[in-house]
Amino acid sequence: MKVSPMLDNIRTIPIVSSVDLDADVHAAFARYRPSFPFVRLDTGGYIVLRHDDVARLMNDSRLQATDIAMPVQAGVTEGVLFDIFAHGMLTANGDVHARRRSPLSRALANQVLDQFRQHVRKAAAALIDASMQTGRLELASDYAAKLPILALASLLEVPATDIADFARNIYAMNAFFRPDPTDEAVADAETAAQWVQNYLDGLLTQAERDRSRGFLAQYLEFTEEGKLARSEVLVQIIQLIIGGTESVRTALVAQTVQMLSNPEQWRAVCSDPTLVPNAVAEGMRFEPGIAGVVRVSVQDIELDGWTLPAGQLVLLSFVSALRDEHIFDRPDIFDLSRPNLKLARLAFGGGAHKCVAEAMGLAELEEGLSVLADRLPGLELETRPRFQGHMFVRKTSACWVRWDR
Image (cartoon, rainbow, N blue to C red; front, side):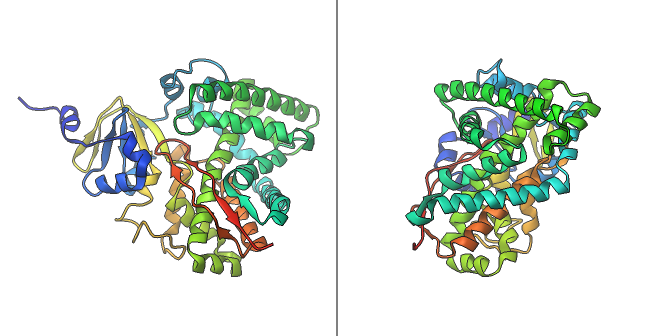
């Protein structure tokens, strides 16, 4: 009897353990990538490993955005967390995706992005000033986590008196998107998401009254042209916040840690600010803040003689693709002089779902590193963090840095 391709895959494609991925995701992927274009995950679904496959499949209509599959799988079937998936652009397909994405993309014009860079730089300097006299800083929670939230608060014109509550609730909401949230964290994230949605609704109401305001007023104008429902208008901003905060937190810590672990490269960036974009690109390649994007296969897909079956959750892994030894020479070495660093942009996705806020993310990472190099050239690594996560947003443990006062 002839074995079907799907049954053959189940019999022969390796199954990778979530435990192994949590222990050392890079080693696990490196073990399978030379021989297999994808692996099965023990908790369900498939992980595509190779750079060219991941890049190509970003534009393949046989893979579709997941709609509400992910929250339902996590047991979340109602509430704001559910709505983030049900009404968001990132999880929508076709015309619905385009209709939700277009107003936000248009509102993030070059002028807005230039102003945003200034917000990031000002926030970064303020965070360093707050710790300057102590001679040390917990990079993850006191710099990398706060910087994007403060910058977004400026973009959204959040009053200074509200920023502490704004930041606290965003951080709590984002816990749902980190690896393996507890039931308590999910409940707290829902409460926080409700607060964030209500608060943003208030900001939008103010912007409606005063159309001279900045980003939000422009965004509202474009949403009216696209006929977005109020729930959709709110959710796109929430998705912008999620994408512009949590992933940046991990990526900013990772790039700084790698620079400080390579003193010659750190000194080079400190003395030549034009190298900052290279450092950020290599940082994204080496430890991306987003592990990859999840899609649903609607047809069988052939990869290097293997069949990725239809009807499956498929992770297009940035973590694996950006260390593909067939694309990057010595992929486990941090090197900001790589000739093909432009390929690190894969960390922002591709195709119709390419990150709408890519320029914002780059601004946060580049200005965040630039201010550190400018203000603290004698920065040293005190404790090395651990980076985890093979799906969705990745996380970092605490990371202490120090400098001479």
